[in-house]
Length: 300
Image 1 (cartoon, rainbow, N blue to C red):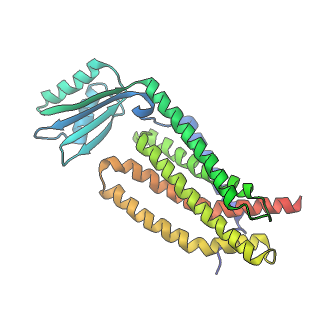
Image 2: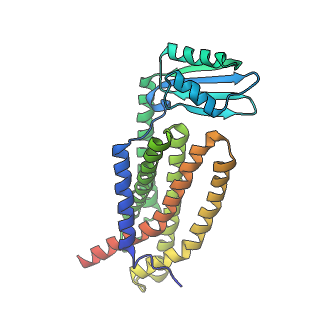
Image 3: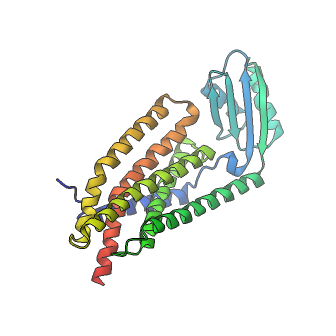
């Protein structure tokens, strides 16, 4: 029994529209909680000699030192803790270290670095340029891959659709990030940027697999099968592959989320959400929107 991806396409469009609207709303209201890599701030790395303070103890001392929204990264094996926060005041740093000593914690200061706002601005600009160039490269790649198809669309339409699907996935993931950033103080850091780019690669791969199956079926059947039916059949053919790939990927990511290092928690969380969105869009967004474009083209 085939799943009707095309018959209920307007339901999927409505669902995607709600997700996109909610994501834009989250980004406008909460914005992204940028880490010090993008805004500037201080990085302190400590190696504790005997007892290592718990996360709750450190958070309490940081709050007493008037340091807000810190990012803590523990290495229990080496007894080291990295602390990132958005403050440049030398006195604030000294107060924090003195309060640690007053509580009886012995440690060596391994690293004390400050990232200026100018460097943070440069990183933001380079990240945006990287994403833009990636989108252009994807558009060109898909257009060249599908250059042999003449019906029912020119090759650039498939490239544009891949970029639209990618923008759909990234925007929804960013909306999710802005919400959890506000609610749980999860910051947008370099590892999170890497997760976003990984989601982009996964999403493009999934979309290209589906479009390639549509191309293959178009080559085999020519115009014998109505285009909407051909797209629906193609989506059902790759359904098992998409579900199994996503399932096995999620198993690994869930293992990282619950049993991996604390520094990988946010990275894994973003990947889990983004890959789920990418799988949904490749099955319920790409094919239906391609069909909708075709139907509007033939009816006009």
